[in-house]
Amino acid sequence: MTGTYAFDIISEGGERIMEERFNKIEDMLSQLIHMVGTMKAEQEEMKSEITGMKSEITGMKSEITGVKSEITGIKADLGTVKREQGELKDTVNILKRDNEHAHKEMLETLKSLESDQDFIWQKAVKNERDIARYVKQQD
Image (tube, rainbow, N blue to C red; front, side, top):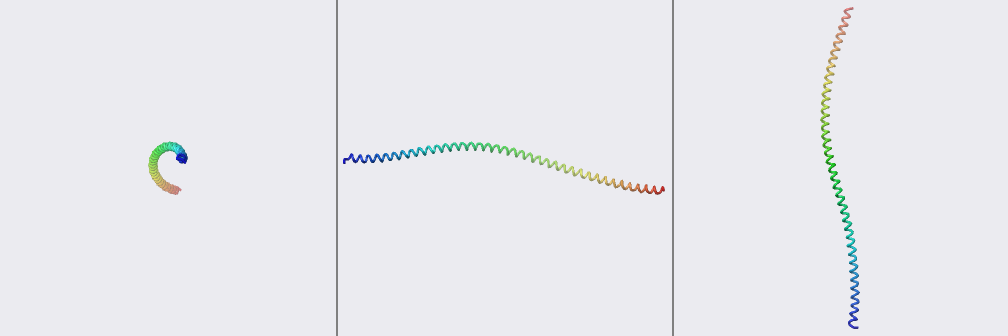
């Protein structure tokens, strides 16, 4: 065995080890490329989802603005209703007072008529008695 033969054996073993290492590195690089591609696809999907979410948020903000506007309108309407309700209460109170006054006047008028009727009945009775006495005297 000469030195070259031993070198050839070592050289062949070294080449094989080098080739195995190269294949291993190549596999790792392939896996990394695949992982980066997968991550890139996931990143694009996330960007798309974020864009969709931003669009939804913008829509929600618009809806919230609309709801706030409606609430403002409802509050204004409620204020108007409360004001009108107060006016109606005042009107009802005035009508009640007027009705009570008219009722009192009617009662006073009825009492006056009742007194007049009593007075007229008393006169009628007295006149009947006087007529009866006069008729009796004439007989």
